[in-house]
Length: 585
Image 1: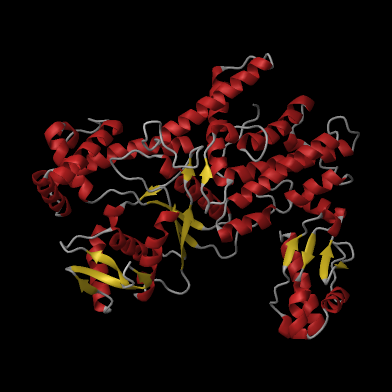
Image 2: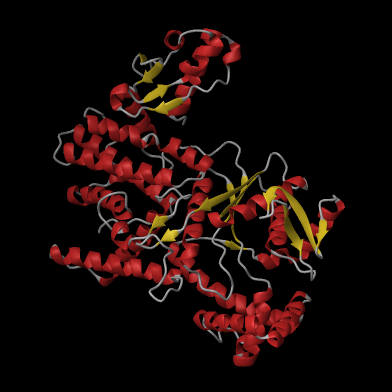
């Protein structure tokens, strides 16, 4: 089903061609929702931009467009406002027809794209032998939501977890464990991840201070890279131990990922260097092989190099990322590659993207994009840390959210004199707590940092997960109170939009496809959050002003159908943010 926005765009373009000729085909109608309902629902602002090329007054252009446009089946007669804005007001009968058309469709009338793409979304990316911390929160949550929206549109999405599972750190960790806990190198689950992290810190300290330990560690890396069976076995055990702990968090967050770590690309690294050398892009500088970058300079103003092979013959992140990019294009056959990492890595991505383009590895029809995000800050506006100054473990942060949601729920239950089962309390606490953390993050513009506050994210008021969940719960309450089966409402009664709040809610429900199209293009989940917040507000305004169960037929069933559509829209939207729902709170 075509969205109203698409329908109007098509009609405006036809009117332009009829009024001013075929050369107007493809002209952007500059069609936007109005900011004030008194000016209608949509506004076409193209007349002003056409004044100079057409050598006519904007209002005259607008009038000619109106004279040639036919929108009578879904709009009131268009009106000109101000210097030449064309305002369109949707007819209630059209809105009623649109709602009837989507009522029984779980996709709410939103058709998948006609030409789906193969898309990689690279997100989360923790490091082996380290615990996931608050720094992994945004990549994991934002990446998952972007993947969900793209999947909803019908794209073939490969959700990749590019874990740090290779490199010097394994040499020093294996060397240290051989001294203090040799069983960990031969026996599965001999250590938990917390112990492994502690040993990693001690190994790093030894590596920095002890030259002999450092040399033995480097030799261990050589063995690992050469495929030594003992070294590989130890490495596999360490990776599996970390993987199990990561999965617990992914399960809690309801996130699916395909792991393809740095080690996957090891066999491809030498070919990266060889091909760059063949193309004449490589320059040897102080023993290292580099590509000197355009537009990047050091402190002295000299061109900055991107090192792809170190002096000792080793490789680095840039080499691995170049190999991964080539693989995703050449082997995975991707049309769009999306990297979700913090904004501190923006320079790195700009640099290796440049090298890949200069090498001709990124065809013009392939979109490669870095999606940067800001920091999660504490109440004082500084990096979120524990009282001891350590980085907060992600599991601890999530557990605390669930505990606080539980305390809030138990307080409400006590105030209302209710009695609930432990199973109910646990489920609601988890859904609200995890949902609150996700929504608080996704509702921010991802490019900005934000202050993490349990009190704000768990509030029942404002742009929060509990506010969204409460709107959904309210609709389920109508079902329980009236013994209503929303799936079996009378098919003889259609939605009738008489009141202003009914019309406002209906229009908002029908604009979901436009919002999801924006998210698909701009990769900004906060646009969907704002849509759902406004949906919840408009539903609550409708609920307060329009009696539902007390209304007479056919108005009663009409309003029940509108409630059901609001609930389905909330459910779909929240699912695309990775949030679960509850029927009661």
